[in-house]
Image (cartoon, rainbow, N blue to C red; front, side, top):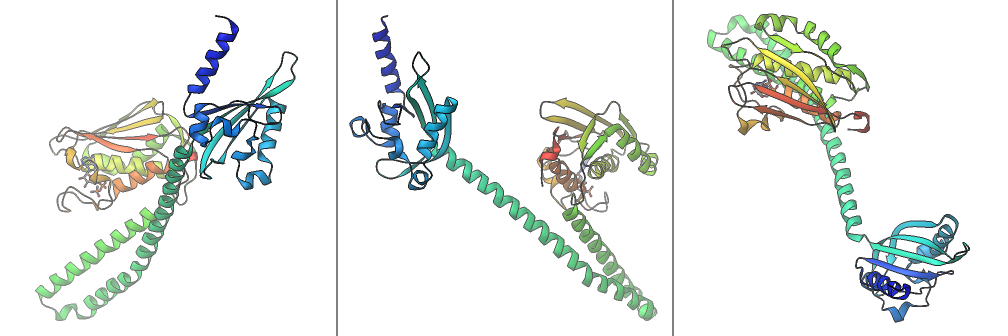
Length: 369
Ligand code: ADP
């Protein structure tokens, strides 16, 4: 193919590329060629723009800071210049343009002009802005909710303290005057007040969780060695066996991570199958997105219908008389894992035990919850 035909074919190709405005400019930035994509994006026909300066696409603000001239200068100096900002169409509407200007040279290295490629990224930019805005709103809302929970639970303690104190005074001073029935009622009031005290304390702990977090290197095996000593009486009483071999050294929040393992191990012991003693296996796998930990038990298992619900605060699948607790343990676990930027879920077939899996990314310090 002779060079001229080749050149014509190339021009035709450039002309037909849609979604990209591809122009050739002279040394001063005046438009020499105009393709179909340029017409679609900017609204001008070739005859309306050939010979005019690229300044016509810029906003008044960008013209005030001589942006087009500065981009041409940068392309001349460095070979290429990139910029993203609002650009003006023929009908004066705006689009978000991504612009690359490349200097063109002759055989002796002298600049002969520029190639300018513009893409309309308005939609992408608006989507990104909306997502960013939602993320910011969500973060503010989360902070507000946490603040509210903290203040509410903190202030609830005060009247509750008055109630429990006066019940005690009442019992000490007037208990002998009450019949058995009245004393039973009083006991119910005391028990309910105690439960409420516990719930409020749990709420406070939940809202405060991670507020004093300190990132450190954690040897997970060492952490579990210490934890199993702390849980010694629970472990001995239930006859539980806890297996863990090689566990990694990771970066994370030690106090919170210890609490996470403690909650999962305590649950594995608590929700054991009465027919056999608890066998708990803790392992970790290195995956592309971080460490995947697994705490596997041979307990009563969890109905798949409730496997998401159990991570919500105060949600339990059993009555207090069956298994004691208040439904905060797994909510804590979820919050701790999320503080590290990870995820937690459970795999379980009812009556065949449960495996709690959580991930800890390699760089938890990037998360600022
Ligand atoms: P609590 O232990 O106080 O009930 P959690 O938030 O720790 O609260 O757990 C929520 C519920 O999830 C428990 O009431 C129980 O029904 C279920 N659950 C948690 N861990 C296990 C487990 N290892 N095996 C079976 N069920 C579990």
